[in-house]
Length: 343
Image (cartoon, rainbow, N blue to C red):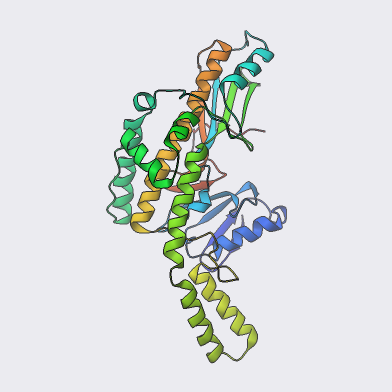
């Protein structure tokens, strides 16, 4: 096992370091030199540089959390289901039906695809959040009170984060863009046909991430530049060697979470009540992403005239409320756990 080490942490790299692109190594090193990354990090074999954060990264949740690490597509994952060995309809029919009934890109439904107040799994998500709060509080000695998710909570949350609630409701059952996809493939073992849907929490997850990162940035940068100026003046007065001066100033910037120009690095963290608020919003956004995939699956079933047979859910951009592990571009893979790896 290869390792990279930094000021605050160590990362186990599951492939030879010379196979990890330089930009990706730089992003890993930023994590290791950052005070929010004190837990053991694991880097996956398919790791690559992401927008501000390395992809293919896992770490147990500590006492600090950075919304930008998971990023804007909270709960992004895949839902695969089988439906037998025969299509029963033409590929052209399925393609036309899906394009007509599953918005993609920035588009959403003109009308809600489901009765959200009635059909969204409010109680199931509330139970999950309460279970998480009880176990996480007991482990960390914290006092966390989970919200009761309901339509009123959802509408208030949309107002808080600046999200159009109507658009959020009409986004359920939409694919989005980027690397999101819907595909039909045949199993090489059973010869059954499988639908795979890859999408996430759409604009709702983006707004959750941006809202809480703005809180983190506001909290962490208030007065930090003044501290940096004071510390810089002290270091220059006490240190003669120019190289030592630059090194000590860099250490202060790292400790304060500022970049080389003294600006917020985008890796400002949340603690205590704010951390709890983000985690509870994330639990809901992850449920929203899963429901989004389920709604799309129902459209595929109508297009094919079938019912879901076997099915697998696999999420790769989330903080697990079950084992408290951060997974960015990585999946849970416990013994006997089923997963989806597209190739």
